[in-house]
Image 1 (cartoon, rainbow, N blue to C red):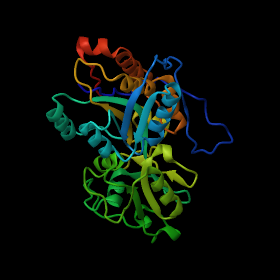
Image 2 (image 1 turned 60 degrees about the horizontal axis):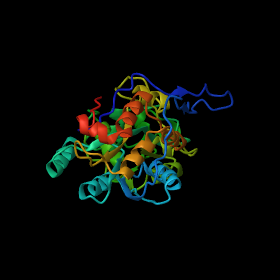
Image 3 (image 1 turned 180 degrees about the vertical axis):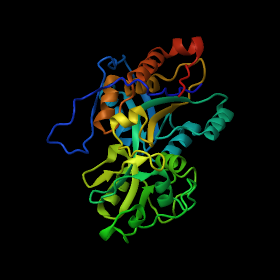
Length: 345
């Protein structure tokens, strides 16, 4: 059975104070971990091999977790292959990876294919919260965009109903030098879970413009926009730099523009909020391999969630973490009694 994430109606993290007066108004409110989150406790004599394959967006996280575990377990061979969510899922299907890291949730079709192959559903573990940001150059004065406008910028089909394409910055009420300036597009390639998420949640599944520069890496998108005064692109909030700024977004025309922050990602008011996941091939009523279990346990521990914050993402609510820790701290007992519990949105 799949482990589904729960709603974020009650936040578990404490927020670090307010912004200092010297900070700019656009600075992020940083989360602080709830002291109730349990610290990771190493086990004895962990060895073996473990491959984690998938999301390039999650690469800083998966590599940080892997490096921490290498220090704890010198005889554990950990390999991280971050070539994209789709590639990671393929390796999970083929048995080349024990864990697939994905920056989006598996689709119904993918779950059905997994069930046809193995006879049971994959185990889904949310490990962090992310805001998929839409970046413009730091000099761009745009106040905000609606999802319909984003759709008309990035897709020619305009499935959100806008009657005209948006190809110049003047089409979104920018004046002076911006009025006739072309909008140049940057985004992730088709192997990326980020691109899939963007297509589904912005363009209602439509193909993105062929004029978009498709990058293999999240950092490359941000770098492109930072070098292009008239550029716009999408990437994870953890890749934000001083050369770009995230655009506040409104879910509907006339709606409030919402910035991607810790609070708006957790409370769901930011339209492009998403979870980051680990997927495990775990047969019902059986325990995962020790190395797989310890990697998951570390990811949702105090140390693992501190790495989430350190790399610019947002930690899970403590209520989610408590359920995950309960499941993975005693995998043999939990699996043999009732199978993995199912979390629903």
